[in-house]
Structures are given as structure tokens and as C-alpha cells.
Image (cartoon, rainbow, N blue to C red; front, side):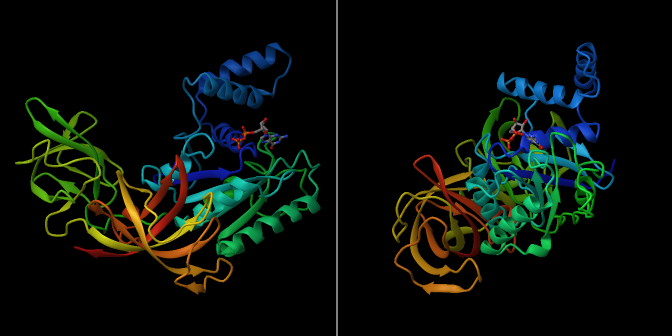
Length: 420
Ligand code: GDP
């Protein structure tokens, strides 16, 4: 047990073994509910398959997931010697790309799962692009299903080389990436060194998780609280609710809501149905502000200190990575931007630079268009007021997803904001 917390993303192509790996981590760290293990140990023994509890636990997780009942691998928690981990999301199941960006599930680090028998696949590329764009610090790369390739060192080396090429392509610092041959299903190199890979003498997965750098504490940034919903509660009045991304909210504080541009004094703060005097990053709160009515503020507003209010962009410059687009993106394109709790149509006013992903250098000034796979610096004009912050100052409020036709087209980070 530990009090250091890490948000961990498990990323990788569909069917490469993400769910199985999460199940394995929960199992090895004793985090699967005891009754689930017990039930399956009994079943396994009845069927003369003692020692097969893991497979049964996984079947159970899969079944429950299919029935949509209880255990989903997102939001599962497990502890190692060094950290308490929360699995923030698992791509492939839901709209990971959007979730990862809209703040609700910011990951500090990630485990990339690549099946040894399949190698780098389309979603491997997409997720690595995103991890890079969104500032994931370190990647642990589990080359999974080593049992299927007879634990061959040469196969492992080939896949490592493929992934290294991909990391270089997206400019991910390969010093921040560590590779481990694993089998999530058989349990090789997860909690114990495997006899099946005598040629490997690096860290096993739980050691690598313990050795992740500590996440940066976000507390010295000013208060930023994106508003999720606004309720009217009898006896109290107007109650905006949301999750504190940065800073501290105290009763008695003078706050400002942007872009609605109203403010007042915080009267009460409520968390888990109890009144509290203050709340901090990660806390989901409902609160009440003197003089603010239900129609004064809305979802997508950001609450901050009156003397350091959230920025409202007239235009902003951002670095984006285009993931998929049926044709090309040119100046004038106006898709919907999703940033924290806001959804606002924004026009890509100019494409300022196209970057060479392999060198990070400017490849072309003022290109006519960009397309899938391109990284670019663009200037964006929101069609309605939007509160957003430079990623270098407040990363929690500095990234966004661009959506169009029901798909995520691109993801980006804000470089600078021009206020009204
Ligand atoms: P996800 O889509 O990435 O979450 O992949 P799953 O965890 O659902 O795994 C896909 C399939 O691969 C399932 O049938 C798993 O049992 C199987 N699988 C996952 N990991 C391993 C492994 O290490 N070895 C073998 N042989 N099969 C695995």
C-alpha cells in the first residue's frame, strides 16, 4: 500500500490483450474481489483444474462485461509497493480518445500492449500518437502473447524494433520507454521473473510500474473547475457541479465563471453529500455562489479565482496531430472542439506550419492543407466564447479533441491564447 497515486492508461490495438493484462494485474496484486476469486477457485477445483483460477476470473470479468453488469476494466484500482494505480480508461471499449482529452481521465503514464504475433497495428499507432500529443511521461511496452510465439527472442526483438520505429516517428523520447516480454494470460514477467524467457534480464512489469516517476503535483496552478452541470436545489439555490482540475476551492473565495463572465462569493461546498470547507484537485463538488442564478452560468464555463480568472480565447494557437480524415483539412474548416466540459464549433483560421514528425522540425510554412498522420501548428477561432489555457501553464485545461461526423479527427495542445 502507498499513498502516492498514479493514473495509468492501458493502450494498444484491439485484441492485443489489454483487458487480460488488467485482469492479470488485479489478480497478482490481490485486487480482484475475494468472493470472485473464491467462487472460481471452487469451480476450478470441482472441475479438477486447481491453479486455473486466473482463467476463470477472466472468464467471469468478460461475461460480466458482456452482460454490462459490474466489472469493467476502466476505473479498476490496484496497488504496488510504490503506488496506488487507477486504470483511467481502456481504449477500444468506449470513446477513449475523447475521454483521454476531456480531462475526466488524464493519465500520467501508460502501458502499451503489443501482441508479439501481430506487431504494430493501426490502433497501436493511433494510441502512441495520442500518448505523445497529450504528454504521457513514460511508456512501458508489454510485448504480449509471448506464449504464442514460443517465447522466441528473435520475434521479441523484431517487435521491439517495430515499436521503436513508431516511437521515433512520433518523436517519443525512447529513453522514456521500456520493453518487457510478457504473457498476460500465462503470467510471464508480470509479478515474477519467467523461466520461459531466460534471454531477458530486464525489469518485470510490476517492477517497471514501481519505477515510474512520481506524477507532478498540480497544486500550484490557480483554481480551474470546469462546470459539468447546473442544478437548482430547493433551500440552497443554484448549484453548479464539476471536478476540480487544479487549485483549491474554499468557502468565502471570490470566484469568476468564464466565459459567462459572472462571479461572487462561495457560500457552501458539498462533496459526497456532505458540506466541506474546501476541496482540491480530483474532487467532484457541488457549490453555491452568492448572487448566481441558474441562467447566469452553463456547462462548459470554467470557475476560477476572481483575481486570476480563466482565460477566454478570441483565438488560440495549437499543435495538433491529425488522426483520421477522409480528405484534407484546409483553412476555414469548422469542426466541433471538445475541451474539458465545453463543446464549441471552432474554425481553423490558418495552418501556420506543418511539422516533420521524424525530426520535430518545421517541414513547411503555411501549407495549403494537412491530412491524416500530419502534425501541424494552427490558429483557431472559436465561434462562441471558449475558456481554454496554454498547455504549458495549465495542462489540465490545455488539450482538446476535434470531432466531426461522429469521429475524432485530431487531438491537440494549446500553445498560446489571445484573449479578447
Ligand atoms: P483487448 O481487446 O486488447 O482488451 O484484448 P483481450 O484482453 O480481450 O484479449 C484478446 C484475446 O487474446 C483473448 O482471447 C485473450 O484470452 C487473448 N490473450 C490475451 N493475452 C494473451 C496472452 O498473453 N497469451 C495468449 N495466448 N492469449 C492472450
